[in-house]
Image (cartoon, rainbow, N blue to C red; front, side, top):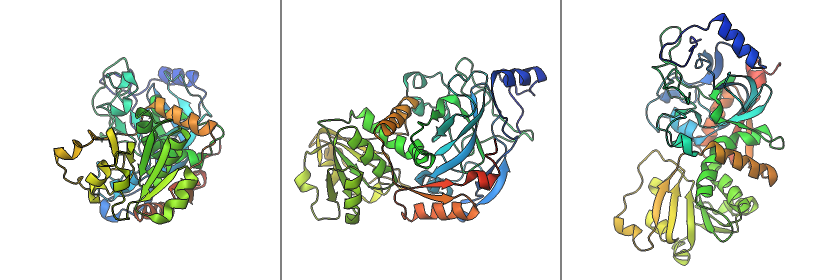
Length: 411
């Protein structure tokens, strides 16, 4: 395990017995193991070949929360990462997964919000600087020094709001420590990126809310989705099905746009008032100047005729991307935006404030996503990512059975 940082300064030092006693005195914790265990891949050519291996987590610091993982959703981002669709692996082997639900084991001396035993979730971010204008305005998901849940390097003291971060965080062998994801026994996360889960939301349903749910809730909320708004959800898959659920619960008139006519019944069951098959010829013509907001949850936008979609926007309407394809978007002319004053945009996950609002909405309105479960194992991980790659999921997958796989859950 990496050595501990004494004071978030620039030097990594071994913890003194005094500091260890202080941490233990300030927490009601059960210590996590020195090394965590996860199902990992070694290269993008063998992206379905998982092996259970140990890895060194980041050094435990004052704002950290140690979590014993219970389950983890499988995100399209996991597949884009392990297949190399978004580029070469930042570190290998890598453990992906950023839709984590688990139980708090211990908290750092500066953590105020959580205690041992709390059931919590973690999404696609585990740290930010906590000092920049973005972090101070509930936009920490846009921090330029953010740390993704997997594949991102740690710096000593990163996330301390009162001190500058130090140099690269290294393990006892002098190797840079990278964040590893949630197909694992435990997670160690800055408290800002840990979310308390309401009692009436089951863990396997809460998991996919941590990334997929939040990724679509944030832009819907920032677009002031509500009564009187006409909102179209493009792509009724893992992201899109959450978007339909949230948009309906927020009071908007909801349109589901899909190239799969077979999804009409499910889209309406999820909450869509209307369904449009984009496979139909000239589907867009009757919808000219209709939508205040289109949330594009598809990740094949590179194959779209975007001009058709943009034409359905009301004046100053927005086409907002949350699906992130491996390939560039289609070429457009500036004139394509002029006819209705429309705009195209995108976003990255969401803030903690938005995550808590989303969970409150799901809890109070008793909202349920459509989730498949697969027990975690080498074979289970392989099956899950292959199903997501093949678009053979209705509509998210959660890996379960963590305690059996890792020998945890005994406390």
